[in-house]
Length: 120
Image (tube, rainbow, N blue to C red):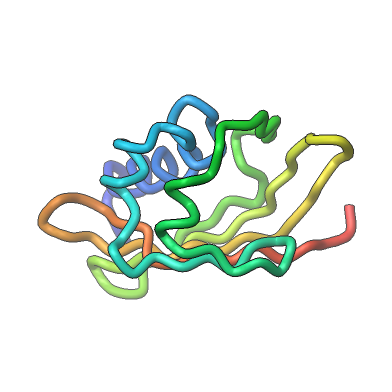
């Protein structure tokens, strides 16, 4: 079982992706995204690291803390995070989410993320 500091840090990092002040801070995102990051979005679109860094600022409207949040340590340095996202843009958007994080010498890096639409 990972220590509480690791779990707290991973939750903070994942939730930072749902806060406008960090999600649209290019320097911040540049630091936490792995060089080969890819996302399979809730919409079905595939996002590269480059796409993600170029995303224009917009309202996210996410419900925090993230619902059904779970961290599974695959190894000491690899974590699988799963949760349910609830965001309000024009309408309530709900999705099942999964992120893969790897600890590096420069901190935790997000390698992969997937969003899958789900029923409310």
